[in-house]
Length: 185
Image 1: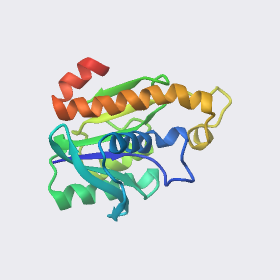
Image 2: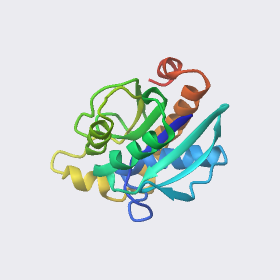
Image 3: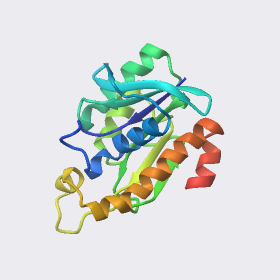
Image 4: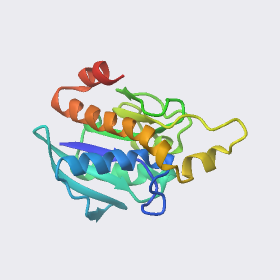
């Protein structure tokens, strides 16, 4: 069993914001694999299904970004999911719009949602898919940059990253993370 967790802030208020790329990827994965995210548990919206022959739980924590780990760890503990079977998806300002990076493990960097996940799990040893949102202009406030609504034109560019991340997660489930990294990094 795999846990696929997208990081974001509650929809619809924060829909179509840079900080909700994790939710956008999870929504696309669920839609393409006929998984309904219509149940609530552990302060999250979630759904279950099968992708590439693997049983999955797709999760969108509703704790707001900075407390995402609080919800995710409850799923992991309840379903006894090993760390290597957790895939966390989130936005990253250090990656260009339309691109992604996959890593087997690593620190949270400056991302508060990932800091919460790492702290809650007590480990950095789990896969993650980072979706590029690019950096704000020099004079632009970072917090506003990540939570402001984005234009349709910018979303079209970012959407390429969402699509790549969706395919990367499916590749991890189909083959393994090394194959996904070789293919999509």
